[in-house]
Length: 216
Image (cartoon, rainbow, N blue to C red; front, side, top):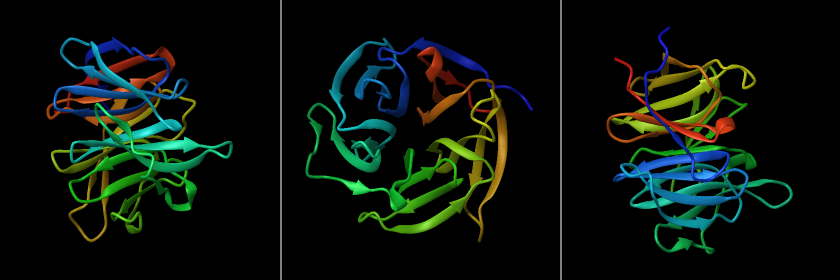
């Protein structure tokens, strides 16, 4: 299997980059250690705005111009989906508990928010009330997800302690989903974003954000 073609490898302005999203020329990144959310201009790599999340920001996606951030909160690390309004901050009245109090990454398909559960190897599509409307069982553990060109792509691994990670495409058009591992990612990646042309992920242990080309 081919290895990803890296296009850019950039120092993260905040340490331990964990959550990641892309929208309208902006890279959104969340730090696992400081709980900061930053908006970075993708062209200049200048931080344009930042705020503090109410918990550890594990996953993030853009939904109708706003952010949805999956946070780990309280001493019990309860997983709650929060609303963040760019330029304003978090809405303290908004919170959707994750199903089974489990989840790490988020994506949005234009209709449903999707929560991934790493070790159960599942992606759950949620309605606006947070109820599960579809369960997608994946062949690998899931550490990132994004819809690219209307197609769900996952960042996956079978062992998080190795450097064997993959970009996995999910075909949801049939009666049951099918999966294809497209390309190898040779580092312990976290989160997945798409800018309309290329993919982005975090190399968290090196405090770097990586942009890589779509597989041919």
